[in-house]
Length: 195
Image 1 (cartoon, one colour):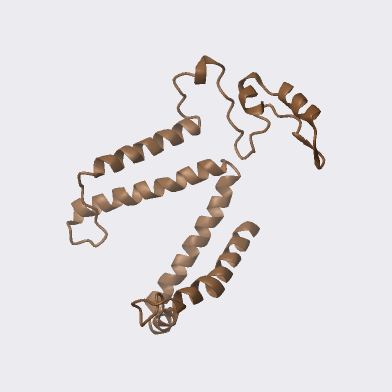
Image 2: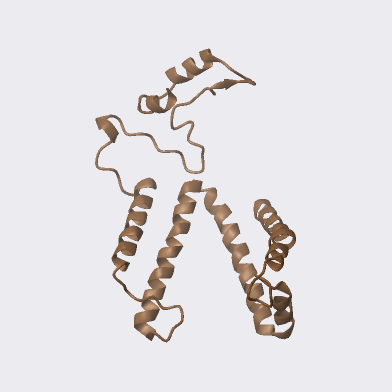
């Protein structure tokens, strides 16, 4: 939870003192500015509905960040990002459903176009990649007919899975002896990675 708090604090500070002033100074269509934050403050003070929706959005982002940190304790960062990418797939599917269930009167509706087959193929490839990377589906054969590469342990850095038992750097200096010994301690499948 400390990470979530720090992430939120830095995001707030950068937004308040760097991003919003820069957007206010840049010329645009919003009362002469690219973004007019004063207008939002007036809207917040005049609309209880907007204020509650803003608080709900902040709570949703905090919950998302907290659960993301929880996921990292079980899965790797790559898996977390891949799962995050599937949100786009669900948003696309929701837009299609809104279009064909509610008609074109919904502002967020997505029509099926000639390119929708490419989107569908991309999303299917993304899900397939997640299933293979997560170990739910196995590859047809190991690369170059050899032994399959061991996968990184969940939540770990993968050095143990590759058979790296000794670091390549000894203290602050690089030692060729350490590199040679580390290469010998690699598993057969990881020899190409270790040297």
